[in-house]
Image (cartoon, rainbow, N blue to C red; front, side, top):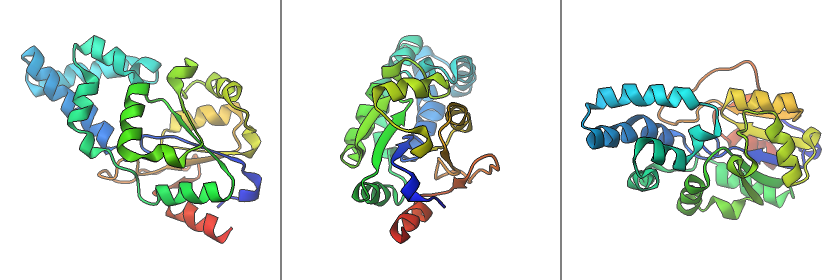
Length: 221
């Protein structure tokens, strides 16, 4: 799939790529509406309708990913609510073996996520992914979401990487388009970010359902 001799840096999304997106989908689409309905005396259906409209207004911005923003806007303790369902946080199959093999080959493994630092801390503690990564960077540190092509230049100021010798893996088409616009040469889309949902289809980017083919490619390389 890739000529690994031409890749020095592997940039990795977290939610939906390394981690199963089921936790986030359940949290924002089911758990938050339930708690919001209980707090404000609404039906769950009414709470969902209100929250979906609120989500849509800030989708693709840093606010959408901010734990502090939603705690303030919804008058809910979002970190506490996340802890109530943290048992759903799970690493996708073959991810740890893939990261381990990248390390053995001397590739730089950099987590690049839109997740807020508080959500990131919870997931790193729950999964222990940090021990398999060389660097972890949240978009909140850089002041722009990954959907903005300028993000990738700010990332380059944070640590030196060559876009032509980098592979970026994400489940978001809008984020992948942003990386492509900046000039990252090797892009890969994950087709089944939520393991409980059917795999999607795209002809726009090279795509995989899981990491096993990449792991096999590394082993043969």
